[in-house]
Image (cartoon, rainbow, N blue to C red; front, top):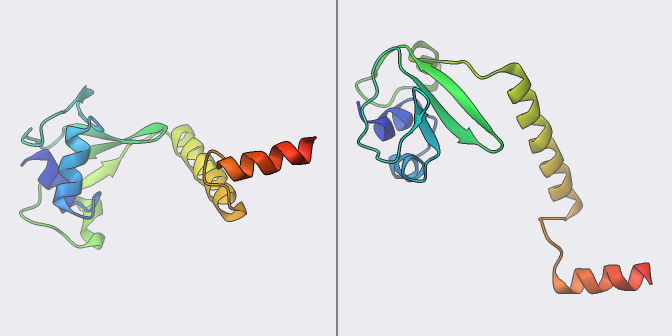
Length: 122
């Protein structure tokens, strides 16, 4: 089965086009090799990884579905093999980003925010 279709079928991506875009952007590996074409075939017992900044989430293929499956059936099709340390790091970064978002900081300060900060420090 094509990698983009497989990722969509096991509900790692909401749409197939989103899945294909991630594959072509180099955010997917099969057996440790970055895949740039969504036509790459995936087989049973292959491992694949998806880039979830700042880590690679790793999975092992258990079975290939005929079409998109329900959320309850996904556990029969793949196993997540990501290290616990990586998952903790990902959760920590997501929590930090969420805290900053709630405080109203979405990245770099705007020009007005920068001026206000400069006035505050002076």
